[in-house]
Length: 602
Figure 1 (tube, rainbow, N blue to C red):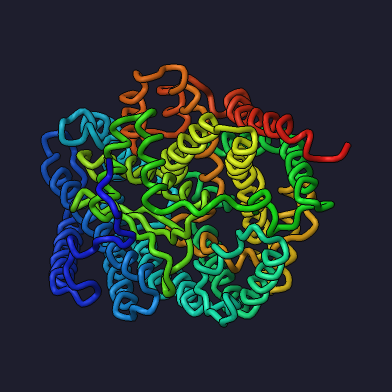
Figure 2: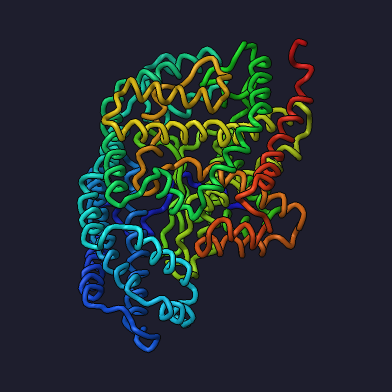
């Protein structure tokens, strides 16, 4: 049992007391800078080993590299939490710039480390990987060596990294600053209330259709006012990427995100092809939902609206209990981790002004902890978000004892762990429903996730792919960005909606993330891959807990195709696995349709 009441604000003081004014954090950054300078000087002088007998310097540099990796991640997580917690914390913004500069210096020095790796003869390299000091990180090191061969000479890559601080990353910072100024004024209980982007987004999910339509129109209008700033940022982010790719000789805009996600282009195309082939079933669901709501067609704001009167608000404490109870049935270890996160204040969930929108989980690898950020307003969707982020946290938790390079798992497998956690909670809730009415509401909430991953995320992928095609020809106007967005939404939703969200490209911060280009398809991959894992878990029962941990620990050490073959015995480049995963969502839709037959005419 949890110790209640639970705090809804996180503890950052345990890392560095004093927040953005922390003297301990200032000292931490000084040491980090010193370590980077040491690495820079040593890696420039290092020479490729000619045999395993000359491994000492390479091993030492690899160890220092991993220490720096962990410390940069720790620093970045800390300032990221500070800025999300309070978007008016100007000192945190300055610290973020300092961390970005340190990171850029480190990345520039990595170009020399890559020179070292590519200079090693193949036969020597193979022998080195057999050495104990390199065995656990053989895959990420080999991956670095291979990818380095596809980039520009070290000096040019270093220059790109240096220029990216005020160029590439600077445009992302501009977007974040724009969002921090977002205010949507609404009337509540006879008073005018100014909402941040995160608070305003939560209000869009009201069960009142008239209010929902009004709020969505206001949301669109408010983003339209910011659109020029957002378009400026998006255009220059895209332009920077395209120039870098051009000089590297990369032809496909999807190359970098696929490399980052350790995923083949064939796997990506097969996944989307299977989804497209099955969309008619989900279009029928959207039509059924519209009929139940008394609409001819759903508008964009209605897609994830609750059916009928929303259920009573779920308190934060009750949501936590639900998650832990349902994790327990799947994995006691995961339930124990979640309880620790709630009780030790690893979660920032308070519904207040000044916070950034969205939710995330970030790790503090030096401390061996994670922190979760969201805005909790008591909806079923909030409980799902909590479960989702705790899934991320558990993934990191089981890898904390591994070398830093072996912990570098990609976004698509990260989204697998989080989506599986969400699926566990949703599935248990549906199975435990006490009536058909309750089961319909819970099923509908569960199907919403399939709609999000198969249609909403697909729209983002289509939009971004088409945006880059046009950006190659020059700047893309606000009006054209709106057109591209609506066209992508129509294509992804089989043109089944009565209205769309033209300024979605401005409202969705994922388009402005510089760490991961194409921050979209990994979500869909994670959803479907987690469905395959969940099916295997149901089949294996209690024996699966340790198998799941083994799979998670491998996520930083192999491609997703190899991971799937090893742990699920499936081929991701063929449609069979994807179809079986989609079929799980189709089963939910079929049950929903049968349960709601009597709720529509004809």
